[in-house]
Image (tube, rainbow, N blue to C red):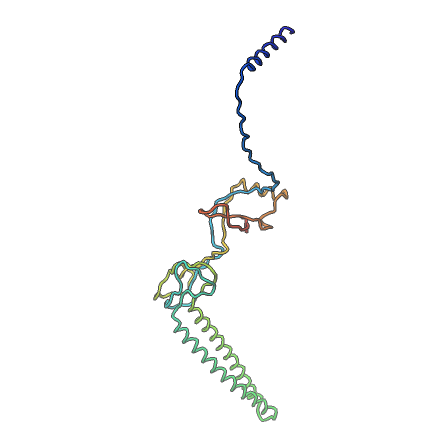
Amino acid sequence: MKHFFFASVSLLLIFLAGSGCKKASVTPQPPLPVNVVTAIEKEVNEWDEFTGRLEAVEFVEIRPRVSGYITEIRFNAGAIVKKGDLLYVIDPRPYQADFDRAAAEVERMDAQLKLAQIELNRAKELRDKNTISASEFDQKAATYQGSAAAKSSAEAAKNSAALNLEFTQIKSPIDGRVSDARITLGNLVQPGAGPESVLTTVVSVDPIYAKVDADENAVLKYVKLSEEGKRVSARTAQIPAFVELGNETDFPHEGYIDFVD
């Protein structure tokens, strides 16, 4: 062991001597650049990314509520419209005539009612003086009641005619974007539930739904987190969600999860 020790020392000395017998010019190297980053503590939220499709919150099929010929179209296809904006006009002349006739009937019934009221009042005075029979008084009272009912019926007919006249102006029921005119000027339209009665459509644009189909693993993960109390449920709280379109980055549109099925 002692021999091995000295042999090892000899080899080491030779190596050092051999290295020390040469003189070399050593140029000091400049220090390497060092980037310094300040460490911060930050909470990082776990998130998942899904592909979805945009759908309108409101979708309305514009249909006529009275029959008639289209005389005006007041919108351009694809335009943004406001609730109450006029879209179509159906020829109002027949409905204006119906309204005028109903209004005249109300005036006639009102005149009859006033006359019946006068005759009933006179009959009451005669009854108090015992100069009119009970049957005659009852007849005057019945005439008055019939006139009152006739006036009410005439007013109802006038209100119905006014509605039909109003329905000749077809307006947008919501704010949104209107589609193209499915039925053009001069065509006869009629109320109905079939596709042939659709004049155009209006879809809302703000707010808007982004519908996504989540995979099974993601759904199970979030259900488990909710059951363990580590995450609130989307059914009981508004959980933020972010959306980007095909030509966007960094998900600039913020919303929330509205419904989970």
